[in-house]
Image (cartoon, rainbow, N blue to C red; front, side):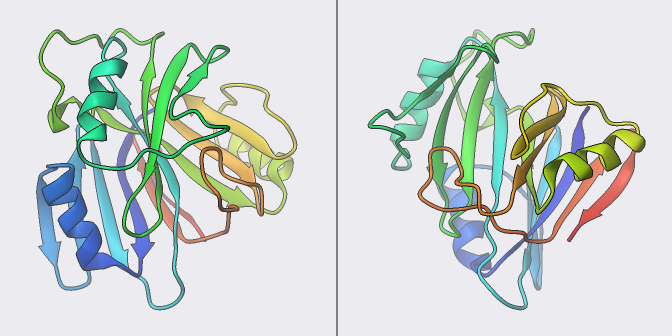
Length: 210
């Protein structure tokens, strides 16, 4: 499953634009009054001005499966990494993946993840062009199992069984991370909240989650 575009809300439009353009060195592909879009490999990531509140989200970028150490060095030059129990990286044995986390100026919890099951190794230097796609987007709901059933009825499959508060839906190229409202985000000191998300999924079209 591939995410062609993800649209999110933010109260920090200008700081976010400069962060993704200047700090992460991502190409801005559109910049209009009230929104801008950057390109992360196969995915267009769009931030729109929020009319109220301070929206924040969790999302992940796939990186070449053999370049986790290079990605971490690249990132340490740009941001402060989040920690969990004193560690600044995650080793997901059951997912066969390694990840690091940081927060952008809007408080979004951003993850770079090397999924070792994928055949996407690279021999070149790690740069912003090594961010291959947005591969995860957090969708927060009051009732996770019921919402997952709705997703399954629309043709989506669980990637792992999960729990009553966390279920990954899709595959390693694109995962909806369905979490229960008020569940603490991993590698962050904040609980999940419901904010608007629009996702364009290859083969499924545009989907709105409010």
